Image (cartoon, rainbow over all chains, first blue to last red):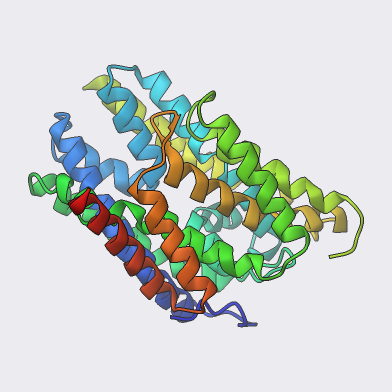
Length: 227
Length: 102
């Protein structure tokens, strides 16, 4: 599969095609979310509603973790917000390329998920709107469909780790990262700063914070203008 | 049960708000060039952090386990110009095999 970074004008279909492998990984994650939620006694309706209205794997798993450990609703919401705060800079980055008035932009911004955002990045801070939305659609279907399958089936969660499926997402991100790094120079420096920051912070701060703190690596862009 | 629904609605609203904020506030304006330069480096920085936390992070600890080997294999495969799907499949296979035999 080619990532299609060379594409100029985007289209939804090409984006959807690029999003398919991510949808497969999302399906597996959705199933494990459904199974986990069910095992916590959430019933069938609540996990499915959650996936439909939140559509956020990382946030939903955080809620499972917090509530499962006996935490309250507020703690769960704070954990989810910390994890999803990375969508703030991502949203700012794609903003100039979205269309319409505030309401429509707010809606289009919902299409920002890690994989689609990265796939739609065209380098130099440019983004392909249609490609990003197209890439998100199969992931939405997979996430909700996976949740449904998960809550309706029983113990398949053990298999996720046994089959190594938990590395699908980091491996995908690594693949996209290696492609980014071919640009060399400051890209590599920014990635190194991000790596050091996130490694250093993981043991000390709540999940989600290391990722958002690592954005500081991008501030390297303020220095000089050689690229 | 109420706790669960409060959490569900709260998280859904908060997530939607976070994703809407940038597009609504920035709108269609062209960002100043200094901001663009920062944003151009956001992708590698964020991707790196996601790789690091999802590979080495577990419940607030750093761990070195089978995931690292899998992700390493994926990086190598991509560097050698393998297709993304193959790289990811090799990563899962590596991790699964290591878990099965060690």
